[in-house]
Structure formats: C-alpha cells, structure tokens
Image 1 (cartoon, helix red, strand yellow):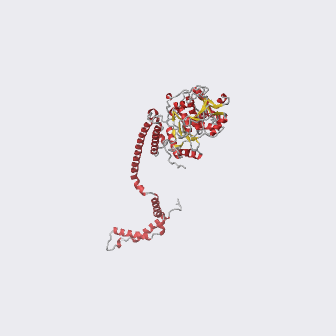
Image 2: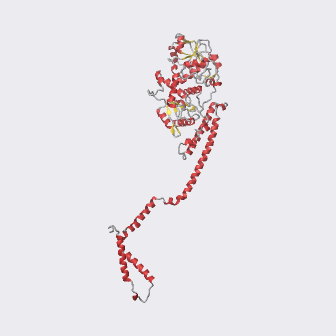
Image 3: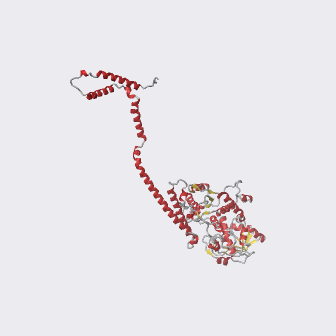
Length: 564
C-alpha cells in the first residue's frame, strides 16, 4: 500500500543524511596497510572523528530545519505556556496555602468558641432579667407607686430587648434559617411565662357606693371641655356626683353637646344599676312640659369663669327653654390648680332639696381620684362597666377584628395632629420622632409576639408611611392596619351602614376606641384623654395587659424643637 503524500519531509532529510554519512565514512577509513609509524589509539580516533562530525552537521544544518515541528513546540509553545502560567497563578499561594489553612481554622475555632461563650452568658443574663420581670407582678409590689413600677418594668424590658439583639447578631453568621428560632428566647414559654398576660384588677376589692336617687331630683350634666373623650370623662364624674347627692343624672341635649345616644348605650347604665338613674334631656323635657328650670346653679369651679361655662353655652341652654338664676360659687376652685376634694366636701356644699340643680363642667375636678379611677368605677353595679360603646359599635368592632386582625394584635393610639406643641410644653415632652417611635413599637411587638398592629391615628400619610417602613420584627415588616374606606364588598361595617351612622366622626372615634380596648396589648399616647378612655375600658372589661404602656414610656424624645 502506498503511503500518503502527507509523509513528513523530515524522514527524507534524515535518510539522505545517513546515506551521505556512510559514503564519507567508507572513503575516510584507512586501510591496515597505510598505517603510519605513529599509532593512535582507536578510542582517541573515534572521539576526534565524533567532534568533527558534529561540527560538520551543524554547519550543514539548513535554516528550515530550525522551524520543523519539534523545534516549534520547544521554542515557542513551551515558553508561551510558562508565561501564561506565571501571570494567571498565585505562585505564593501554591507554596504557602497548605501552611495557612491550619492557622485559619485555628482562628475560626477560637472565634466560634468566643461567640458561643458570649451566647451562654447572654442566656444566663436573660434568665435573670426574666426572673426580675416575674417579680414585678402587681401582687408583689404593693409598697411601690405605680409610676415607679412602670419605669422599673420598662427598664427591664429594654434590657431584655437589647439582650435579644446581641444574641441575634452573634447568631447571624452561623444561622441557616430563622435566627429567632435558634435563639429560642422570646418564643419559649418556659422562659417567658405570661409576660403580657391580663392584669388582675381585683374586682372583689372594689370600694363602691349605691346609687339610689330620688325619682324627682335631677342633676343636669354640663360638659364643655375639649372633645368627645373629655366629655365622656366629665359625664362619668357627673354620675359620681349624682350618686353622692341622690339624684337622677340628665344627659345633655345634642343641641348643646354631642349625640351621646349614637355612641353610648344609655339604657345599659340603668340595667346595670338596677333602677332608673339616667334620663335623656328629652325625657326630662317631656316630664317638665318643656319648662325646665335650674333651681340652683352651684359652681364647682369659680375660676377662670363661674362653673367653667362661657356665655355662648349659656345662650344655647336658654335657647332650649332652660331657665336659671344667677350662678353661685361653692368655693374658690381654679381649673388650672384643682385641689383634692372628699365625698364629705361635695355633700356639704352641693346637697339641696331643689328639684333640678347644675354644677357646671367637672372634667378637671379632683374628687376621690383613687376611688373614681378604680376598675369598674366607684358605683356599685352588676356589669363590667357602666359607660361603654353602643351595641352597634361593639358588634362592628368585633366584626372588624375577625376580618382583619384576629385574636392576638396590638393597638396603637398614635396621636400627632396638634400634639407637637402640646407635648413640648410638658416636661418631659411626649412627641417622639418617627424612628424612635418605631423602635418603641417594635420592642412591644417583640414582647407581645403579635403579628399585626391596629393603628388609630390622626397622623398624615407621610408619617404613617415612614412608621410602617421602620416597624420590623425578625426581618419582616409588622403590618400597621387602619380602618379602610367604605367598601360594599366588605360586610364588617354593614350594621353602621344600615342604621345610617356610618361616616359619623364620633361613631368612628368610638369604634377606634372599642377596637383598641379589645386588643391583646395597647400602646397609648401620654397626655391624651382618648388614650385614657381606652385604658378605662380595658380596666373595666378586664382586658388590660401587663405590657400596656404609653408610647416610649420612660424615654425622652431624642430631639426636641425649641419653643416659639
């Protein structure tokens, strides 16, 4: 078989060189007969001949032979490979990597050992903090004031939160999933106990009086201070006065005050007391044939105005057909500096045989405060509370909770409108920057382990939007839920719609209060009567939590603007 034409020319050149070499060899070999006198050793002859042959072959080597495949591989590709290897390889790491690995592993082990030791110490500290928390139960702190107790509890809870944050930072490099589940601190029932459980209000220890009014003796309630929440507090105090003076309380007319019948269950009060103790203005007007006369107008406050009632309100009373004599001060009591009064003080100054009396606005009255503020109030009754939302509002609140919130939720009263100037006039201020407020809300959410927050606020969207972005727990945003606008597809507010009271500002305010009062934990606004009314409902209903507090309680704002 013929070889292909592609046979290497290198073979032909080698073959030709061998032929020439053999021919020259035969020509140069001396015959034995021509040997000279001087005999040369065969080894030396061969060595000399070998060197001569090398020189001859090098001289006869063609330039093309330098560029055959073998030379190309050796002189071009091998150096090129070395250059590539040099520039792409960390030569130092090749020689020293095996030495550095044990050192790195040793350092890593030491760091991990230190972190685990720190975690152990933090867990020990955490157990101690929880032990202190459990000792702050109301039953074991009777010798301390409520404010001192709240400050102490707040300090402990801040340390617990800080402890948790440190644990999460130490665990984060090693966690493969949810670090909070690995730390196991705030979700472990054996550690927590009932941290945000219901407060024992000791209803059996309440100090009460019987409200047994004469059916023809009336006290006409007059409330002019502030908004609805202030008026409700004023109304409750009037109830206490009426009970002390053995009179039936007359609810103000909506023409001079709020429409109480849309937000309160007035008949509920009579049922709880077990007799007729409250009547509406319309009922009294019907009984008196529209000729209502205030027989005595005895003023609880005399400064800055008698009975703390301005001329505009007096004109409204007269427009209703109410007549009255001149107002008379019971004592020199100032709204700005009210003094403490006792039951005996009131009975001695305001007892009268007249049919109808009035005492003016008593919102600022300081009468038996501990008695009035106790859970359930100072009056004997068979219900949880006397003054509570109407049945329609109660049912609507329950339906909203079932639709949007569920059983475990935090309620936040976040007052902002008009609160900046009000708070900055107090010491300390109660108006907090949004980031600081978000931190405080997050701490409460962690303690309560609540997935959602109900937001009752008058704040602008710009503020609530920033607040929502900053309230984060375990890497997830905690939803801040507000009541949505009316939607016919949603049925939670159908009762209000059917009775024509949807959109009423006072109904909506009372609905906010009711939802907040039903929460697992409540965060209020210090200095707000809206908050105070929610706290009253929570105490009376027995829903007050050990974790209830004012926003950022125990802290001062980290920045306060100057006053004008």
